[in-house]
Image (cartoon, rainbow, N blue to C red):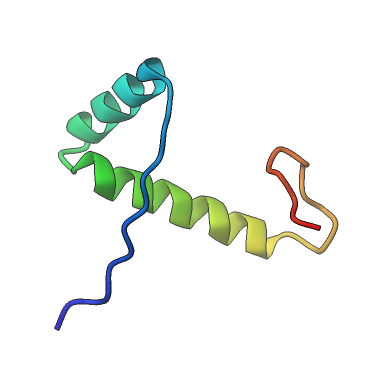
Amino acid sequence: MPETVVHFQIRMPPDIHERLASWAKSNKVSLNQLVVEVLKKANEQREAQPVGAGNGSAHQHR
């Protein structure tokens, strides 16, 4: 049985969309699959960093 899927809409500049779509096509995967994998890997890297070792590029919730 498939996992529950959460739908999330994102707005991005057309040039980023084009670059990601091209990357996905060259890897023979869907744009959605590529974005999910990139976000998963970025989150794994973030979680592997010691607390306070982030580079500050993402907004932090207070």
